[in-house]
Image (cartoon, rainbow, N blue to C red; front, top):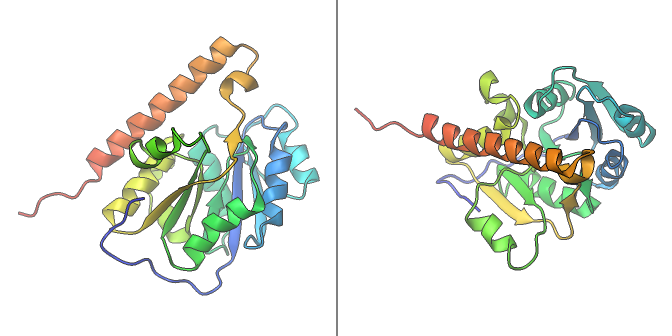
Amino acid sequence: MSKGEHSPRRTSSPSVAAIIPAWNEAATVGAVVYAALDARTVDEVVVVDNASTDDTAAVAAAHGARVVHEPTPGKGEALRAGVAATPDAGVLVFLDADLVGLRPEHVDDLVTTVVEGRADMACGLFDRGPLANPLFLTSLPVLTGQRALRRELFEALDLADVRGYRVEAALNTLVARQGLVRHDRVLPGLWHRTKEEKLASPVVGHATKVAMLASACWSYVRCAVALRPQPAG
């Protein structure tokens, strides 16, 4: 958990949109959509089909989501398309399409933290067990795709930061720089399909995962350096 100097601003019953960026996630996106639809705090569920070559869009639509298409590859690009497609939502909850074990109460937990004014952004981490969870909560960059936030936070990002996996690091840094409140928590039982499971070759999957994590961590460092407050004078 990271806290700034100011209390989060309260909102009065804002509309909430769940935005699910998806690239070739036909195997899991349906269950994620169902969990988001069953969350009592969510008013709309949008899946952004990010140039998938499988049945992701069809599965998402069949499970009740509104599907938006974003042909430019990249998680940030997909999130931007989802935000643009939900202009009336005052609170956004982002969910990955490859989640396993997502429950409506996970979504409600993140959203109510923001809606009730207890935080400006709430982040949900995978459940890695009692030994690893404290490490990921307190000692490592929080680069999770599961997060709820006020719309204006996302819209305050520079366009250059809403690209690929740097978007999550940029959001963390923006919240810290503005002295806002972020709550991090483990979502019990939550996991995801790994790159090794998704891709035909475990070796290729592992290499893809390492490249993704390297990109995300580099973005975290870059944002932390570039956006840190400058000394007066």
